Length: 132
Image (cartoon, rainbow, N blue to C red; front, top):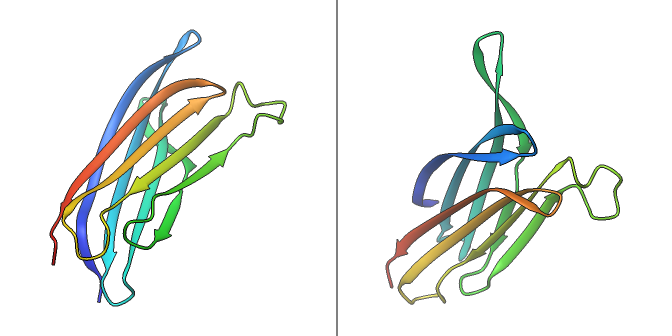
């Protein structure tokens, strides 16, 4: 049975890019899987776009990390430096860390959205974890 540590965090980040402003929505969940002795982080990043007077979401990335307690982990999704559209396409980095098994502390999830090398959105989720 999964124990949910943090249900959902949503942030809308406003960032200027070139001459156009872009809004991003970030949703993140951190789930402790006690039966497996692992943590699961699931993130959904969308760009908020206004079309015909309505706000719609365009999914940018859906990074996910499954790792053991005490083991920091990272994942990168999106455009790579060697790709021709690197400067105009989003790329997302997800970094997570959590306490060692049986120790209390904080589970931390950092999400960075970039257009090329320029940071356009940053989100952080920090959740207290009991020592039990």
